[in-house]
Length: 136
Image (cartoon, rainbow, N blue to C red):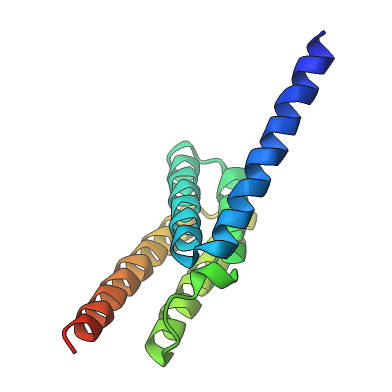
C-alpha cells in the first residue's frame, strides 16, 4: 500500500516536471522566472549554510548556482556587459565553493557578499537596458 502511494506520487512528480520543462521551452520568460526562483532558493540555502557553518551546504549550493548560471534560460541579454556580470557571478560561486572545501567561513561569507552584489548589479543593468529599449 505504501509502495503504491510512493509510486503514484513519483508518477505525478514526473508528469508535472515534464509539463514544467515543456512550458519552459515554449515560454522563454517562464523559463527565466523559474531559473530566477531556483537561484533565489540556492542563495537562501547558502545563507543558511553560512549561518550554521555547514560547509557541505555552502559547497553544494555554490556549485548548483554555478551550473544554473550556464543554462540557456540564464542568458537574457547578449551584450559584453551582461557577459561580464555572469562571469563575475560564476567566479564568486567558484570561490565560495573552493572556500567551503577549505573550511574557510570568512572566505565563504566574502564570496557570498560579492556574489550577491554581482546579482544586484546585473539586475540593475538589465533593468536599465530594458528601460532604454522601451523608450526607443
